[in-house]
Picture 1 (cartoon, rainbow, N blue to C red):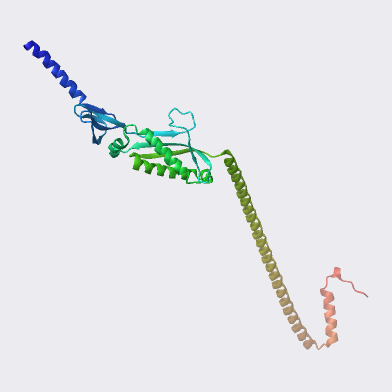
Picture 2 (spheres, rainbow, N blue to C red; picture 1 turned 30 degrees about the horizontal axis):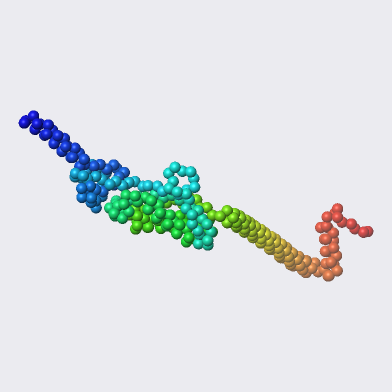
Length: 297
């Protein structure tokens, strides 16, 4: 009897050990988890993060990615892309093809809502959501705006996609890249031609402004030169006038002195007018340089 009990005890212990082991489950750092009971077929609402947990017999984790996941729509032969470039139309009716990529991340406190609403196979639904939202966003702008304001369109698409994912996909889109915008070739060539002409107009306008500045500078220089010449002429005229006034004043003083001296001489000598004139002639001949004098005898 005892020989039969020992094997039974060993088997029971082994069974209990196995049941205890399978009652635990593990989550890696890059994973979230929901506790699923196969016995009751229920899911616990509280999500779990990385670690080893005792869940109970018949329970295990339904695992979800914790890290960001990349979605790529491109015409390149990439191994990790989810599809070709998205096709839509602009507001003015032209075909447009968008190569985009974005990174989404599940919201920790909405993991249960995600599972309850979309189940475990949520990624195809995410892709359809993204295609729908980005295609609608493309119809809100005309083709010229795509060509000239791609960065602002990328920002608008990012905001639209992020808000929709938070509301409907229980996740967020922290990063978005509008890689390439393909418009009809004829339209792109026409836009390039328009841009070239606009650049030529801008260059011509800048050249015109440069020449205008040059001409204005020359006019200012000429006006300044005229002012300098006018100031020099005024200064020279003032100098000549001052010299003339000084000479006249000196001559006047000299004549006055000579007149006084001759008057005194006439009074002292008793000369008459003829005698005075004869004296002045003799004096003039005496004072005149000999090499410049010629006397007729």
